Structure formats: C-alpha cells, structure tokens
Image (cartoon, rainbow, N blue to C red):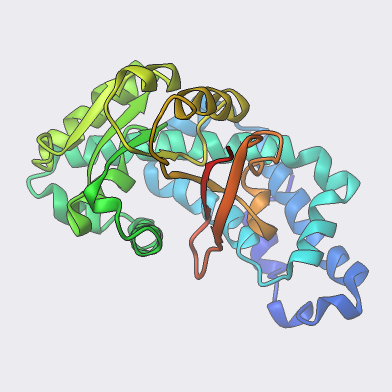
Length: 294
C-alpha cells in the first residue's frame, strides 16, 4: 500500500513534462503512478474512517490529490491522462473521495464558525479561502450587473462560501438551496454567526423549489447533482420567464477534471454558452456563463 512517503520520494517535478506534446507518452508514464498510488491509498477509507480523521489530517490527504489536479499540463496531455484505461478505472473512486472530502471538511468549518468568537477571522483563516475569493471576484467582474439581482444557488452546502463572499464584497442578495437537513441547519447557523441573515436565505429543498422562489440569476454548484435533472428543470422554468436570466455553473476542465466529472454537453442541452472563465492559480473550478437558447 502506497502512503504519503511515496509522494515525497517520487515527487513530481513539472520540468519533467513541460513541453509534453513532444513526448506525451513519457509524460503520461511519469504522472500515472502518482494517480494510481493516490487511488490505492484512499481505497481503504470508508466515509466513517474519513469522518474520524482530525481536520488537519483530512486536509493533508486532500492536498496530495490537489497537487495532482494542479499539475501544469496542457489540455491535450490532461485528456490523454484522464482517458488512459487504468486511470479512467479509478476516477470514480477518486471523484467520490473528493466529494466526500468536501462534505466533511465544510462541516468541520461550519462547526468552527458557529463556535468562534470571531467567525469572520476564522473564515479568513480557512486554507481554501483565497481560492473562493478569487473565484467570486472573477465571477462578479464577468457579470457586473449581478449585485442588482437576487441569486439562487443550487447546492449551497453547510458553508455557503460563495454567497457569503458575494455579499461581503458586492452586497449581492441571495438564497441557497440545500437538500440535506444537516447542511441546512449548519448553513443557517453559519449565516447567523456572520450576521448575514437579512441578505442570505437558506432554503431546505432541491432545484424543484426554484419555481416557487424569487430570484433572477442562478448559480449551480460544481458538486450539485444530478446535473441533467437540474438543468432540465431550469430550462422549463426559464422558458416561462419574460426576461433573460443569467445561468452560471461551475465545472472541471483540464487536469482538474481528475477531481470530479465535468458537466457534459448533454447536461446543458438547451442552453447557449456565453463565456467560459478558466481557473488560474489554485482555483479548481471553471465558471461557465450561459443563457437559455430560444
């Protein structure tokens, strides 16, 4: 069984495969053992075992995967890597781990924020905070009229970081939809601890509630599922609207798709893509701006 020492002893160096199109197979051979080793490492963990880890231990394990997702490879090589047979076979395991990590890690953060004497300071110390801030600023700058709208966020989770930061920096009013009772309770408590309950509403339910709520822009979380149903339902709702409604969703492109399955063309059938904003630095998500195709 490979452990963290494997990654230290066989550290990936980007200079080993930059210029990869000259020798993609060699680059694939360099990267492949690291992905398979990570899959083998997490295979032994049940959700209960992951939940029993201390937050720092859980995060250190995630960082191994995060480093793989942020290797400086081009889109062509990333496609070859993720389509390689052995790697493709372990992607469901890796992607399930990624979703589980975030569910657990965000619940830890929610508990810290609720108990904190200074929740804003606690939030700013969250290791992934700079990524969220970068993501939100890019999103708001791409759609400058967003502060004039009320945003619905499908799949907000126990810490609706996007809604929190959009309100903090751009005074955007919003509502978050979440189907998990535990996540709804945590999210509402987090919003109260930050003093944002007048601007951010958390609703218990899924995308089917969108028809009964007031909003004029929508954001679909990267981990919200099932994507095909969410977008199909959105199509039906938006066809009844008189004015164009901005649709924003997050997905995974390039090597970052090792983390989670990208939104497919079939998922967003009936929508017209207006712009893709690809991630920079350590941001994971590509942000896609779309509208209903009429």
